[in-house]
Image 1 (cartoon, rainbow, N blue to C red):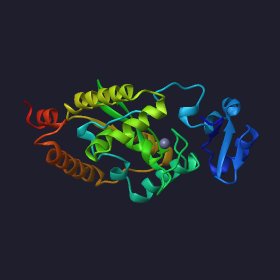
Image 2: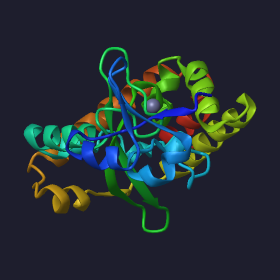
Image 3: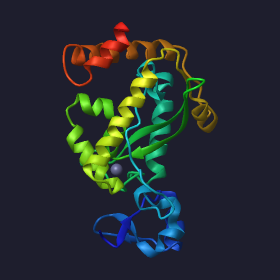
Length: 243
Ligand SMILES: [Zn+2]
């Protein structure tokens, strides 16, 4: 592994990074720091290189079925969601918060960080960060599986966390079980007050209806894809038919 680490430096905080020991690589057009400087540059260090963090830096984080489609894109006006996601890109200098990388077609995508309370069944938004498409693919494991990209995603998860492939597979299996368990319930609520407080946005009136419509469409797609055969079929069947 290279002794230099790529950093996530927002445009506005360049001088702060420089003071901490970051250097700008003009050829690759990115900020870098040697490993001995990382402790002084923590806010800019991608999670996988942070000396104060331990793996997993990246794992599947699946949304219970009842909450599919219920996200900021559905619940907010387009310009508000655009502002929030662009701010997420800017805050990491358009680099992936987990690995420091960028995608080939577009650098980063916005990932909503949800926390789940399994007792009250509330999904609470904790923040939005920029992730490169490869890392984002690991987070949205169900979508990645249905696109037939689980091998690539497993390898990436193993590499980022410094795991063997079988440890990554176990982590993905655990995530699926957790998803299955959470998806048995239909009364999940979604709390986006973080966005309301942080950005002063107001959820749109029709947001609930839009989210519901998207949920139905995603569920229909899943039924069509997994309804007859395949690894997901047994519990998808259980979810919809209850037997
Ligand atoms: Zn990444």
